Amino acid sequence: MGRIGHLCSWLMISLCAVAHANTADFPAFLKKLQQQARDAGIDEATMSAQFPQIKLFRRAVAPSSDKERSLERYLPSEATEQRAQAAKTLYLAHKREFDALALKYQVQPRFVLAFWGISSDYGEREASYSALSVMASLAFESQLTTPDLSAFFAALKLIEQHKNTAAELLSDSNGLLGQPRLTVSAYDRCGTDGDGDGKADIWGNALDVFATIAHCLSSQGWDDSQTWGRQVRATSKLKSALIGEQHRASFVQWQAVGVRRYDGAALPQRKDMQVSLIMPDGVNGRQYLIYDNYRALKQFLHDDYRVLALVHLSEKIKALQID
Image (cartoon, rainbow, N blue to C red; front, side, top):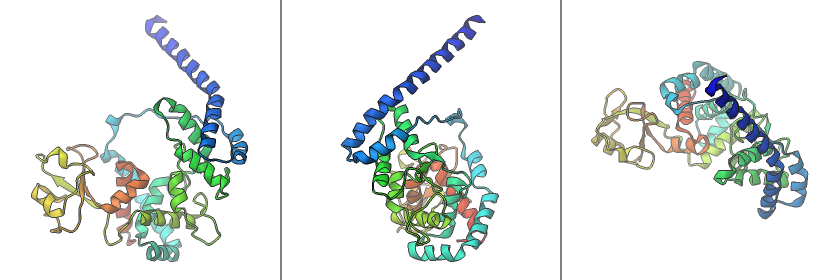
């Protein structure tokens, strides 16, 4: 077999042994987790009913490399014409509801549709796993890094308060809920009943999904008089301290340090907006000035790649005369 073959076999046996040991340790971890839930104020009846149902969830994680990440590849694969056309069809089918939500929450329908499309492909990618099992398993996997258990405890609270049953709380493999892929805290804070039936069903009720997304964005200070940002070009001599969400400046100030519209034209001569320059792929990649609405989106999507896919999709939806 050779030294390399023996080494590979030994590694495989070792990995299997670790996996087996981890599986065997899961019940002990759940006992510790149950005590932590008790300390967090979860009642005994809820814990007695729910903890026996929690199972170890194993994710199938595809290998990836940050070196392979590129907006030039990612954006065309996510912000597609097909998704924009699907958004138009959905908007026309629910125009009355979308227009009412736009009035109530002051959020443009194209952003609600783009949010839904990027999060779950308009519900085609189901959140079908037990949220409690997924979140407990993620905490189990990351024991050495002091896992954040607040989402798990918040999910138990939803069940305890009869806002949802455990069977209703379904997540993706990252513990994000429903078609909008919200954290438990975001769902608890802005989950909205869109059709008047008394429940915020973000798993199977499209009207609740629309209303919840609009409410979530509104809760972060969404401004429908603005858009999300714009792609720009910046001089290579720009100081690195100016790049990133932490630094804000007016368009006039950005113009003064060499930032221009993507086509090379001057920026708007406005001093009333404070915007930031981001370069997710570095100085040689795409460059964007981002506004407060972009920041609102990032509160829920967290990753610049996903937010940029969403806003680019929103532009394609807008081009279909949907705003």
